[in-house]
Image (tube, rainbow, N blue to C red):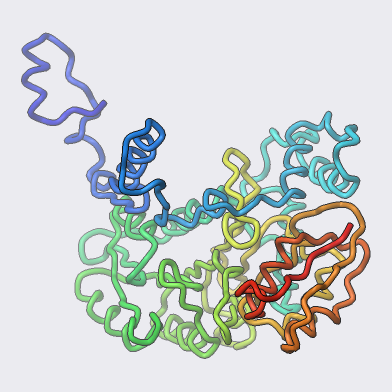
Length: 436
């Protein structure tokens, strides 16, 4: 336990040896760190939850946590396939168990073959297991419409936060007026301000335009940059897209303008894209910075430096499994070869291409994968579509030719129908269900 300076004299009077680590002798940069999503409000929420469990009367019955994007804590069900593969990798004796499906066993065996000693507990190279990085590269190529992705430019980390801090460590240097400045959006996810405080870097705020749905304005970037150059050396520009906590999704034109700005001002780009599978607004579409940069061509594609970040703790996976390196995120600090990835993407199943071809008729669910790629009910089943709504999206849903091997879930069909069918949402119509 760290002691304050006022405690020192009392310690000396009692004949105790003075502690080396106290609140006054600790690293002052660490002492300045504030991380609001896990601060005093969260501690008070824990106290309230404990009091409710003990029967203390309150004017409410539960505490709803809105401080962090913790998908499964808010009721999102884990994907069975991912949990099965993880269990098999951690305890390979289960590979002989009839309780696990064949495709999960094959995936686990493939991963274990790529591990040292065929064990998940073995060390890997610093950038992560080669096989996983190769899979990630294939995912990125599919996501970005065939633009090549090099697994050697992909690094795995224990979450996006660790990767972001690592890149910031590489960038921060200098003292006084030469200290590194980093442009971050306001509102921001507090990881950035906390990391910059710990690294003794200069936080350079640029403000998103609330009146335009939290849009990013290059003129505001230029204002912040010019002002900061009077007292520090700005070297990096952080972009959060889709926005956290604001939720805005940048248009392609905006991304191109940001890339040009960073190129002209010699700024390293950091693209936080962990919410790329959480786009629901009609007309919104996610564009990766890597894809746009490569399509802009020289000199941007060959000279602009970019590190992009993704995580399986968001989107349709929502997994934040602790203690398993190589299972969460990839990032790239390599100039002209930027990539971003998610591990073990299930979009390779045979049903997924069909789903992608049909997604044009959807809007609010435009980035959600089908439950067939997520819930894994195993038994061959075909949708029994009870919705008779004449609206175009519902007609399209009824016309889809789902393969027998595609497993679906009633909850998924209800969610789809509720999203686009007023009759289902109001309870006056029947949502599609599945049989089998």
